[in-house]
Length: 357
Image (cartoon, rainbow, N blue to C red; front, side, top):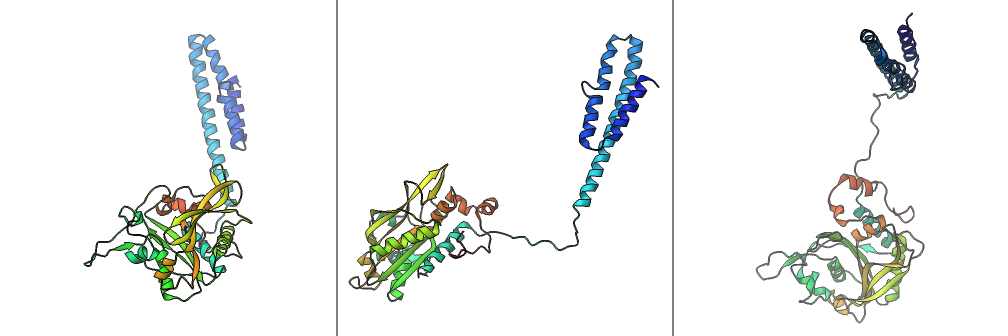
């Protein structure tokens, strides 16, 4: 047997004996690689005479083709065997019914809405609702907002076309009109929250023309500022699911409350994420105050006999703070990828006992 015939027998035998892809690749490199057996013999052609070079070159090329064909054939066989083994171990009965798959998810705004309702419901609050299209009086006048207030301007408020008498309806800019309607229709004591959609001419990373707000109202004959502070502190601890939270009440001005306060909570910023209840930084989350006597009077009650507090906060903003959502505009883009990431399972109903989030 010639040297090339012996080499062919040796290499083809090694190819056929390869039990897996890794071993076969090792054989390929040892035969056809830059320093392989055939390649090393190719290097000796330069020292031969032309006739010898021609004959030896043809023989080596034929050997190279046979080994390459053997490797390709063995590789295909190994892949087929691997597939058969995989199919045997990953057997699926296609006659079985399909597994149920959850479709859709609860939007973060809906989730936070329910969380807020659960917390204040546990405090004894009921939910009140009102129309989205309001009269100028319910939206502004009854709330002690003067005629020259900037909020009444068309660049801030969505107005409808004037009626024949000159009056104009508006898309409510807050849920405060619900408080007036509740005072007109109910007797004290009153303890309500009014969540719902509101509308303003504003649009950027933290503002949208339509957003969600929740306001609270407590009225009786003895409610005072201490009750407001306790109520908001307990809400923040429950909502952000922390054991304690520091709050700072800063004097402010709202036409419908006196005194008026903006409320900050302590927080920390780590890698662009906010954590409530820890740290020395402050974050504004809501406005509040004692209900102005003129507002109580507009609701048909006597401010000399009734007093109480009110507060208001953005539901969308609370969702952003709690769940780390950076851009408010994404709430309304209907992006399924975003909803799958930030959404909640439909059966994950928030409760104080079982957990809010």
